[in-house]
Amino acid sequence: MDSIDNMRAFLLVAQIGSFIGAAERLGISASVISKRINQLEWLLGGQLLVRTTRSVHLTDLGDRQLQRMRRLVREFDELRSGAADQPSMLAGNVRLSAPAAMTTVLLGPALADFRKRYPQVTLEVVVIDRTVNPAEASLDVSIVVLPLICDGVVEEVLGPYPRVLCAAPSYLAEHGVPAHPHDLVDHACITFTPSARSWTFIGANGPIGVAIHPAASASDSRVVIEMVRNGMGISALSRLTVAKALATGEVRELMPNYPMPDLQVKALIPENRVRLARVQAIVDCIKAHLDAIQPAV
Image 1 (cartoon, rainbow, N blue to C red):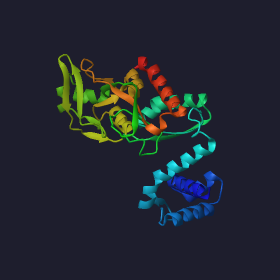
Image 2: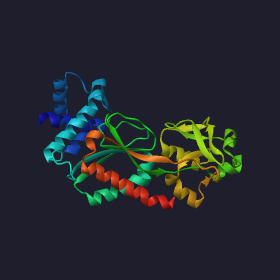
Image 3: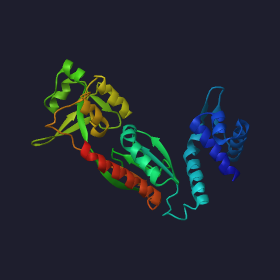
Image 4: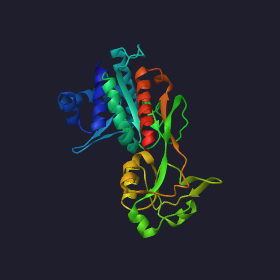
């Protein structure tokens, strides 16, 4: 039990970046937190954290052991609550990752609804715009739109994720409106860094591929949206995330006669988590919310 408490203290300090903050969260003194981490470092035979007067950082050992300890603590909590022995029980914790913009538009309402239905399930949401293997990242489920093939992971399609090419009226007034996908070579294009630097459009005679040489790019989809809204250029964005901006005229849809093929929202679930009822329940809840908002976009 002491080792679990020591790991719990380490994980909280790593998350918050502060011994004092972790102590306040746990309702104990900072000296107790320090003692617990010292005991853990002695057990593992190395330093886990670098402490300075202003910050706390993981060492290489701490970084290597972080996910393993997180998994051990979670499995212990499940064992203690009985959730591991009762896979159909809607209790315990769900650790989920999703892209930033989707978290705000889709997951926020879906997770709020989920918590109302299943108050015994706690949620930990990791906002990340790159696709990760949920089994390696100690996640119960990862909501993605970019493809990824993972060993030991079950993939469940949740629904379409429509995209739209758009720009702000201020940009179009200055640079003109493209009429064909090939016109984009003369425009400032903004890309989402994890995606491929080419855009595909559906023409009357089939797909049209365009190589993009971005004037700007960002690894956070919210930043790309703000760049577009502020007139920096043209980008391919999720219709879900810009629905309000399109409705108000803040951004304009471009080349509607050359639509972009939909991406697919998928849930990646480690094989050893698929049978947990709380994991399937949250996936079903997200799918239901995605289905409900499709007609509005």
